[in-house]
Length: 232
Image (cartoon, rainbow, N blue to C red):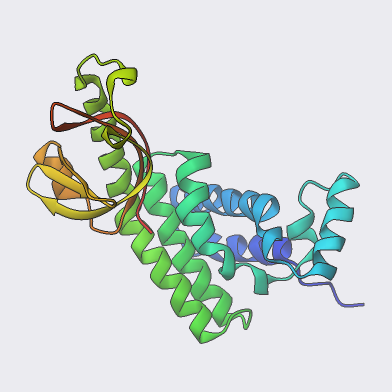
């Protein structure tokens, strides 16, 4: 009987193939990224399953198999999860170094090309995942740097009583950067300008989403809280 090709076996094969191609330090990074990808698939990729496969997954997971997704399903499910993995999981759950964030995109590109070479992905699937990986390698470290700069800026907000502010003077939500000027950011909903360090405005890109809490005091917007910056 031939061995069933699962996500688990394919990811293991990818690592083994790369082991002979890259340095010991690099393969360690590959292993870390693939471990995070495996975890993300096992925890979140089930949402893309049809009803029958979702039933199989739930039964296996509830029976105690915490890695049921990668044990049950084939490699055709991997690349469709790449954006979720890079945009949310690596940013929200891992919160790793900028080097790790950059590597997550680079390893994703390598994996997408390898899956195509092995016949596990179509050319269009490969191209999309490689583009997502390239953008992640470029933008995730940049977005993380921006988030750190904005976090430091929160200390500058003056003391205020929220009960004295009008509803339109408080913005707490995921907001999209709509315009950037040197030292200033403008957000969706007509919010802005928010004065920021020039380095922050250099790092930011139109279209990025940020979870922020902003308050307007005497016609000036201040950053009260900031969460993650989403660049994809």
